[in-house]
Every structure is written in structure tokens, then in C-alpha cells.
Image (tube, helix red, strand yellow):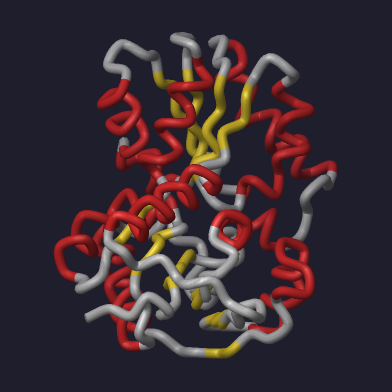
Length: 269
């Protein structure tokens, strides 16, 4: 039997999934979290689906071994390639980021074109196209892979001239086609949201699936009677990196501040 005070496991290819952690902390303040950033193997986007599935299975099993009660796949590429496998093989509920993001995009689009930007793996998978069309079959969806964004974010170049030039190159075709909602289909991309909003203009809604994913997680825990009881003191969280934990700590504090004060090092593979 799964204990209600067990932690939620969250994983991503790097630091980007901390956007999901931030949303979880806001919506579920009594829950403990164990977060894994697979910084040794980031980015997942250019890797083959089989490789991503292997990485995802490995980290998900490690989280189960740590005693988590649910797993949130914060990585869009891992969600696209591995979610169904994880839901079939893991003994705890597994939630991905694609379907929640698709629901938010459909609401924001008001029947007009939706743009999706993501890693090569996420875009090639067609996961967002399928998820959006499952809700709104006639809605136009325009997708663009943006492979340079993850390394730029990992480098901390959030408003660098080079990043702005790259973003302009990526977004121009989508904006020319009249998208009114733009899905940030990688958890690293919300760190670029101010820059992307400036380039896209006020008529384009940026869709960050983190809040929707936190809501979906809350709904799953409630439906299974797994929500944590209220605590007298704030819960303690664990953060794990597969490489360069000191760098992870420095970058991660931009997301979470003092909530992230220590990073463990665990090697996978």
C-alpha cells in the first residue's frame, strides 16, 4: 500500500523541470518532492526514442526504489517517447506534461492556429499535434524544433543577444502564419518566456504546461486518496543531478531560491 506521506518523484533531462517543481510546490505545499535532473545526458531532444525510453525507465525505477507515490515526467521529450511505457510498467501513477499543455493551448487559441516549439525529439514525435487534435480535431497546429534553446538556457544566456537572434529565427515562420498560442514544449523554455513574449508580441499567448501539470497531479493524488496530510513544518525536498551538482545548484536557485539548498549526485547508466 502506498503511503500518503510518500514523496512525489519528478524527473527531467536537466534543470528545466524545476519549472514543474515550482508549480507543484505552489499547488501542493504539503507534498515532498524528489527531483532528478539527468544533467550527465542532457539534452534528450536529439537522442533516439529507444535511448530516451531507456533513460526514462532507469530514472523512474530509481524513483520507485526511493519510495515515491507518483512520478511526474517533467521532460516533454521523455513524455512523448516514454509515458505510455512508464504508465504500463511502473507500480505508481505516472503523469506527463504534454496532455496538460495541450488542454491549455486549446483554451487559449480560440480556434486559431497553435504553435508548438520543442526539442527535435518532441516535435518529431508529433505528441502535441495528437494531443491537441484529440481535443480539437480541426485546430491548425504548426510545430518547430528549436534545438539550440536547451544549451542556451543551460549556459544561462536567457537574454543574450545570440539567444534573441536564434529565437527570432525560430519564431518568425510561426508568427508569419498567425499563431495565437505558442506552446513552450520543453521545460527549459519558460526561462526564456520574457524574451519570447517580447518577440511574439501581446497577441500571442505563451503556454507553459507546468501549472496544468501540477493541477493534473493534484487531481490524480486526490482521486487515489494519496494527497499528503497537512504538516506542522514545511516538507523537505531532495534534488539529484547525474552530473555537476554544484552547477545544478547555482542554476536551480534561479527557479526555486532557498528551497533548493543542496543537490545530491547520483550516476545513472
